[in-house]
Length: 285
Image 1 (cartoon, rainbow, N blue to C red):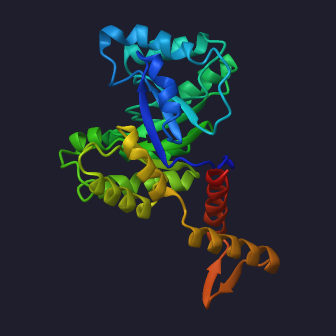
Image 2: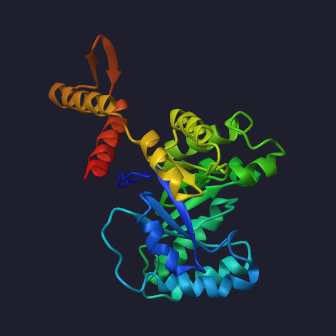
Image 3: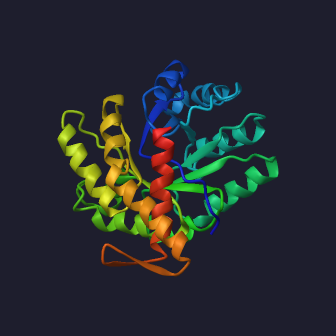
């Protein structure tokens, strides 16, 4: 496992590849991640046009605004996905990152990694776990490439695959398995968007549940959801102060454990403390 840059991934929003005029609005929405969509949100007849317009967005240098930019390609098991990959490989200004949907096996990721390396592209990868096969292979997928920065949980497709309701309770096992795999590889894990725009309280409740399960963030389907998501997934002032204190105590003690407020805290906790402080520093900046 390699040490990856810690960055906020509290919220993400899709913007359609067919509508490049919406890209600046998405970047200004407050989301930590903006994903240009080439997959489910684009009709087959429009795939080629969306691909060309999406890749054209990256011909100009991107602003250093802290927003993570991703393009969601089509599945590499489909013709449209292969065409997406070929276009990225041929580009001299590839997107900073690609999101891979419906990943079933590590082979898909390894192949794309190798192709990007051959092209000399530094493009990072994000993978969506939303199939039965992908869920079974989540651990192997998470560790198969050092290009991977995050795993996404695709709840809608996953519920259909498992033949269960799309609820937190019904998908608890699937979510927990993806969290476990992501944590084992040192990756962020990001949850599926909450689809009911008329239930902001329901969204907040679900966001808090997945946060407590280990998720770093959650998707949005509308900009009006982003502020609440950022709030839920931003460490509180108390959490940040505690993390800074634990780091300080460990660094001063230079041992494998310390006692703070009567509680024994061992060194593995440090990694999460550094992560909390790093996210707090970036979000406050």
